[in-house]
Picture 1: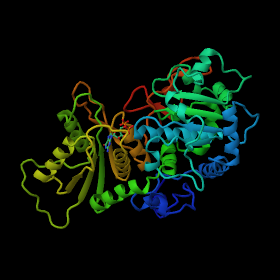
Picture 2 (picture 1 turned 180 degrees about the horizontal axis):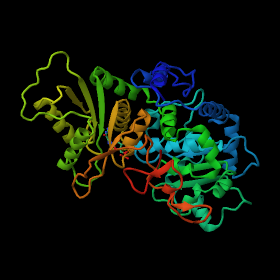
Picture 3 (picture 1 turned 135 degrees about the horizontal axis):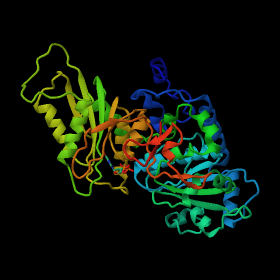
Length: 475
Ligand code: GDP
């Protein structure tokens, strides 16, 4: 979009019609208040996307928990009966993996639901209700506690008889018997049979199954763009392909008031009154405990080279320039404290060569990943959201935490290359091709020819990722 568009959208609490009107504002302040801090949307959602979202909301209202249609389909599920034409078909998302992963997979599964006219129901897991507001008006997207398959979720795996890949191996996926439900294993360790989910012929079979239950930790949207059966719909929904997660994410993920308190207090206290905001997301995938000098060097090399932060004058005492100096706030996020402390001290001990003043802030340093602790993930979600509000973003390779921030913010980040053998790569970072997340474990299979292929070389809008050579991303 151009500048006029984003200025106009800024004033629009419904984000150009992306978000439905008619919610109770107090119960989820972030839904309509996020525009107070952010720059609005990056580009305009297509009118087709908007109309499909309104249609989806109507379908969900018709089929959501405890509606007549839901009760009937659940009864069928209990009895193993498959109705010829159930009023509603569902895709159930199992709560699985870290927060960033969960946000990406929910968006992917929602997209799949849109494409296949299914209703998405969300396993609340331990903390989904504390983190996210209900995104749909008048009806819940959470799976009720008495849903008959709930107790089986933990045991669903590739060896389950209902697993689609296993069914293919057993040759039990035939068109004559439609199962009442199928488990789709789309996690990083899935095998060649599980991956046939991404083939049109297999979709033709799955389409008849009333309940699909999915476990995934991957942003699989890019591979849906390689399926002929979805091609037309997807190009109408997203004329600009790099906005898939941006629009779906802004539609679906609204922090609860608890998390929004963390976001807005932090923003107002440290980030609101500066000329420019830079986010630096540090995620170090190393078995040893940091902080590491090479990572610090890499962060500084990248931000200096790309003009995101000014250099400091090691010999200077003070820069005396008239008037109010330009101010920058740097929001750093990391599990560890060390990087923040070094960068903050650098800008305190020395003047910048430009005379700008630079404030460095880091909301938390939780030490290590603590997936089951409530406040831990509330802080993590608040930090992701705060990063999305920055003007410029530096992210770490391979991190879904960073992908969510860039996607929600509509930002093309500078990606820090993954260090190898304890050394910072040169160049230290690269600007992303698009704001889209990377699909880390895509299939490399040509469904028509029934043989392997490089799925990153088939169409111009699905490419290999900057930070993972075998990954796929939309551009
Ligand atoms: P990924 O592992 O980087 O792809 O991201 P995930 O979000 O899936 O999993 C990492 C988890 O570690 C997060 O959910 C957080 O719980 C925690 N974590 C990682 N980096 C940070 C950080 O900078 N701040 C906070 N608060 N938590 C983090």
